[in-house]
Amino acid sequence: MYRFLAVLSSSETCYTLITIPNMLAHLLMESQAISIAGCRAQMFFFLGLGCSQCFLLTLMGYDRYVAICHPLRYSVIMRPTVCLCLGALVFCSGFSVALIETCMIFSSPFCGTGRVEHFFCDIAPVLKLSCAESSHKGLGIFFLSILVVLFSFLLILLSYAFIVAAILRIPSVAGRHKAFSTCAAHLTVVIVHFGCASIIYLRPDSGANPSQDRLVAVFYTVVTPLLNPVVYTLRNKEVRVALRKNLARGCGGFK
Image 1 (cartoon, rainbow, N blue to C red):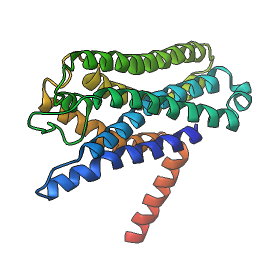
Image 2 (image 1 turned 45 degrees about the vertical axis):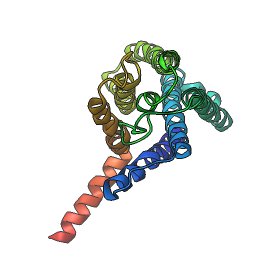
Image 3 (image 1 turned 180 degrees about the vertical axis):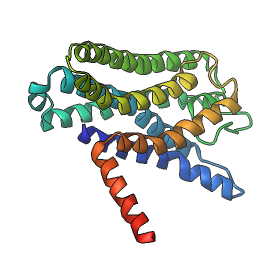
């Protein structure tokens, strides 16, 4: 679990670095221009890390399934080499999807005002600037997004169906509570991540309301990466104990 948390933390750090510095620069400077090459690179890495996070959360759901449903075999099934291979597969798959979508969007020339109605290069605002007919591209990207988001989410639901069935067979209340508590942080992050992804990318009229899209985008590019470490750390007993000790020591020193 901690290996995957470390990967998730690194991924979210890169995720924010792709959009936030550029957004802050545009707020502080008069020039808000971005080159086509820069826009292409930003979209590729943003989509790659976003898709990778979907697959990574799916992998973390499988990790919880093995830990709860097959605890005695956990160290054998999830040995370090397997975790490394699965992690590599997650990012290869995520960036492969991103490469396909980015190539589809930038395969046609752009015209019009050249103004991206967003604070970063997202799919729908950039696709609106295409000179060629973009409806078939939008439909293809829509179905590809459905495949990534729904496929990942359904696999997570399948993992938790087995987990709930296994937990309900635990005779003690304390044992059931402990098992459920190990999944609470992951479920919280899953709901937030897939909820935002569904609102933005699983709508046929994606991009029809730029103001609403920008508001949701701020949430999943700024707020969610900020909340995830808090969610995971405060669900960890050792972290809570250490935090209480530090707060008690600080209050004692202040007095």
